[in-house]
Image (cartoon, rainbow, N blue to C red; front, side):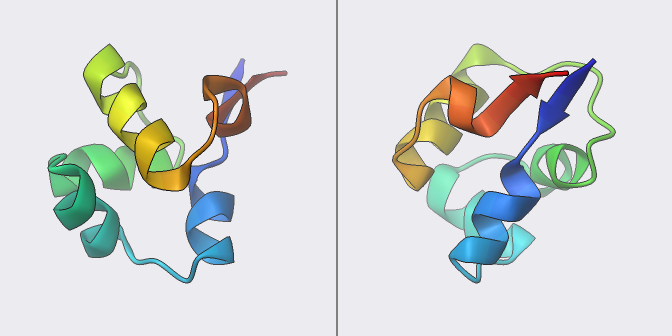
Length: 65
């Protein structure tokens, strides 16, 4: 199982889903699915944009449990 830490990262920076969507150019629905951990897949470009926004590595954003 893969756990997404997007909600935690957003909370630490007091960001909303629309803030992340606007700053990354990702679709709001994509960000929502990752935030709620209901996404079934993620595009590598989306992962890269999120890592760039939060200045983190893929391992900080996702964790294999």
